[in-house]
Image (cartoon, rainbow, N blue to C red; front, side, top):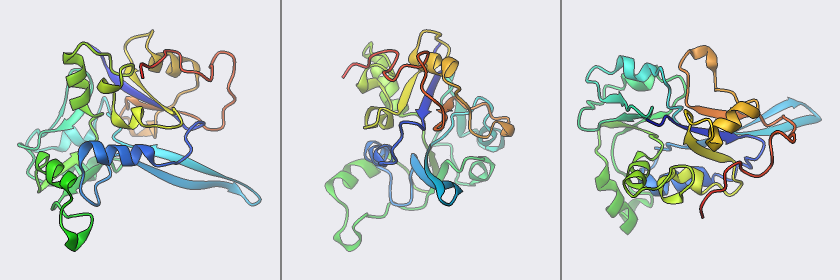
Length: 232
């Protein structure tokens, strides 16, 4: 069984918000729900100041505190490591939102239109019925794309159709996806050779989402090009 994970290269991320927009388009999320987002901050002291782009999403923790506090077991962990919310079991108590240390969960109060009095667009009419109101939503690595791709014999992280939307639409090629338990996968090799780190390891959540530091130097051991060529 694979253990799906993601690597985000902060050295390559340009803060274009392509991941954020592609996630909203893929999942038809209403206003105020941003399953993938980019936080921008400034580091340093004037005049030596650097802007840092930090893409955030559900960390897909191996020890998720959100799962531990869910009273109805709506938050579940699949054998492949993906943490998801069963909307049919969620009662909207928001305990998981409080427990998540990464702010990766959102409560869907209603399905408001993006353009107010103009009403729902055709895309909203088609996408909103996929979700319930009064429940919590979160990133699940686009598990529908992974599952559909696997059923067709495709490989997540290599075949676009089977890979999370934020990864396939990253114009800077700063995101990588694959099986962390496969030592030959792109994500495993990047984690092993490029000083990858987990966000806030002191939380003890052991995330499957990893980051490559922005301030590192690219060495011959870490080529600029992806280790495994993606199928376009």
